[in-house]
Length: 247
Image (cartoon, rainbow, N blue to C red; front, side, top):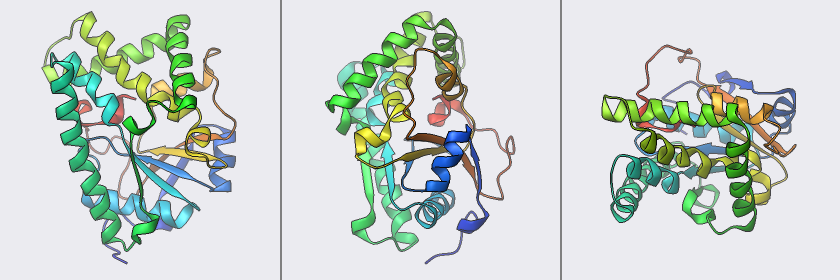
């Protein structure tokens, strides 16, 4: 196994969002690693290091690439639905190949490489139910709605180098809504006993998800910030347009 890259598995820092998240991290039954197309943070070494840590820490690892959510960003930028899907699929394909190469680099056997596109779950009954719950919550909770809008506005500002219109922000927020079902109940969608979703920085939309009276987070669903030892919060400025940091 390649030991190059972002530290060994034991040295990674894990910060759960809540005490229940901490408990689920300790159970270590499943981890979901989300990798957004074009996210500059996930260079080859960091991605290999993250997947090495995940495999050494959790009983099962799944990776997911949010192709279906990226479509909404492209549409907010003025692309037609067909063009947006084409570009999102192309970007997602490149990202999937990078994930597979990272698994190959660290010696993960092929049968243990569980890789998904978000679009695979669009018709899953649990996903459909949770997506409807998310849409209802955004309409009922003004603080949650503002968190979604502000995150979407930051991403579009980075793409456009100017203020987006309200209509663009409304469309872009659907990126977030598309990902939220897997933030609420990955175990029910992937049929695992419990799960922890990991990312490299704390996200205001997830913080509000845990406190909103309109969002029903499964007690089997955890979230944690995970970073290699060489990375420190704020050590590098990540362009919001490059990836999932707007979730």
